[in-house]
Amino acid sequence: MHKKFFIFSIILFWIHSGTANAGNDKPRPLEEIFSEIGYKSVEEAVQEFEHHFNQDIKLPLRVPPIDFTHHFGRFNDLEGEINDSLEIELISDMSAEHHYIINVRPVKYKIPFKAKNVIKLENGNEAIYTNVSGFNLLVFERDGWQYILSIDKRVAEQVTPDVLVEIANSIKI
Image (cartoon, rainbow, N blue to C red; front, side):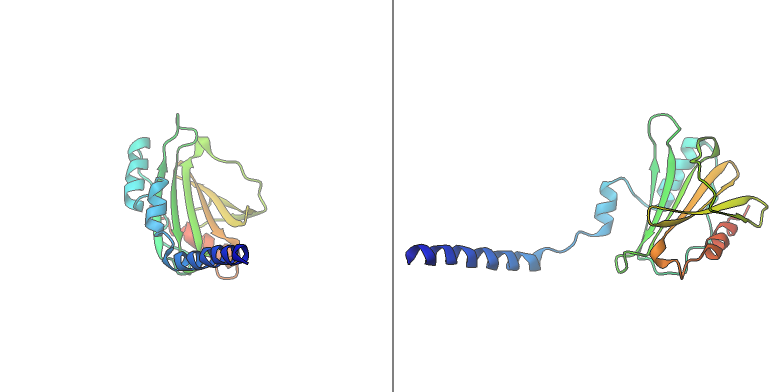
């Protein structure tokens, strides 16, 4: 009898301590998580990228028409220049599917993509629209840079290929 009571007490204590701690476990702020993996303000990341390549970059003036709560930037400075790139991420801590990424790298180190759809931009350049790993991508070149605009495909009804083209066209000289 004492053995059953002891085991029951241990189980009850374990369940109670687990539920009591669950209420105190708040998710870590996205700012903290992203800064730990090298993200900072978009402005700081762009400055580092431009300084590294000694060339200015122009970013789209438009963003997808969905809500974002955070925006981060990261300059990936790896060995050599072949994998160096700028990443800008817009995310929402309210909706996981609200996830938009801009990747920029020199054209001479571009990532090749197979064209699913080819779309003409306002400046006459062609853009490739494709899907990769749960994201819809618009890939194009401008001023010596390869731009990859990526949006979570769960918001494809709101952020259509036409919207991505409008974003790409918002890069002005």
